[in-house]
Length: 447
Image (tube, rainbow, N blue to C red):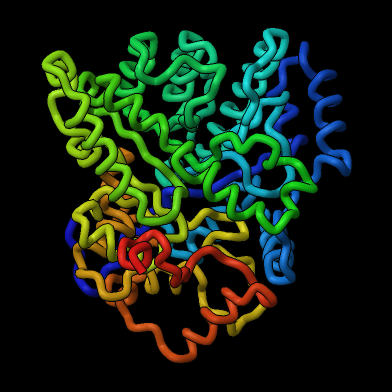
């Protein structure tokens, strides 16, 4: 995919969220479950179940309140207007947009941390999952080339998960919200999953693991979430190694060897984590290798990573982008806005003087990188990983007048630096973009 200086670049976000309202979902509810659905919604809407802004600051609370004003949480037309404004040609869509709307009938979407699902809840949880998938399929039917909707599946029942995956693929969804390992699921290294891997590969449904591993006793508890330690523990337990545990099981379970066209994306797990993770995986392969293992998994884990695994780099920082380039993994990076989350790059603005935060964050992340790397991270890698049509994406980018490559590589001015300071001032605003901390880099750890 080549671009001239005057052409709009294809910018694709690997991370966005929706939050359908209960009233939107009710029409997708089978008559048999409507009373139960109404009771569930009433319970979830009680004061005790409202969305909690963990470790709030004035800026974080203000940004949350502002982003709540967008109708793009649930309205595809409003979302498309926001995408156009930010120059986004297409985006991956997860549930959970921070608008306080519950996932139907009890399933906890990304952050479902239950140790087990009672048998009597499995049926209604599966009904709620299908309700959401049906709503999302209709949502994504508006300019469908621009929406990569991720289906939720009843992963505690592999046969049922395969059936729901096939339904989702037939109805326009293009990937799977692939949870990190849970106690109530069969391990991803087990041969039981073979029909699932085969179905996902056959339907070009990539698997996408968003941060959200269980954080016992923390997520969802208003008191614990308001504690000063909450943010640090969430980073470690929800966005750290627990969210990536499935990767090792899949590699050593021969998944990528047997299904070479299957793609896994690990989304919103910030930091320069790939270096130590790949070293650890390769070390385990080296130190514990046997002729039998090498026959089943003949390549190093880092080799499978290069061909089958992508980093969904939400609100990517410049030091992360530079390290990905230096480490040779930049072709596996997919940038993301995290729309419409308060910590992301998208911002509902009431100030006509305010620069576009998404485009400024992209320029900040790409500072000092070669043009081909900028093109890859901002869009081309996603086109490959998500099986998108490159010419279709170029046409969308031109139609919405997305920034050109020179625009994305333009230096940050002094006035823009002052805006960045304001965006990251906890008393004024909030975003996880524009991060300057390099705590995950080797140099910092050694000093």
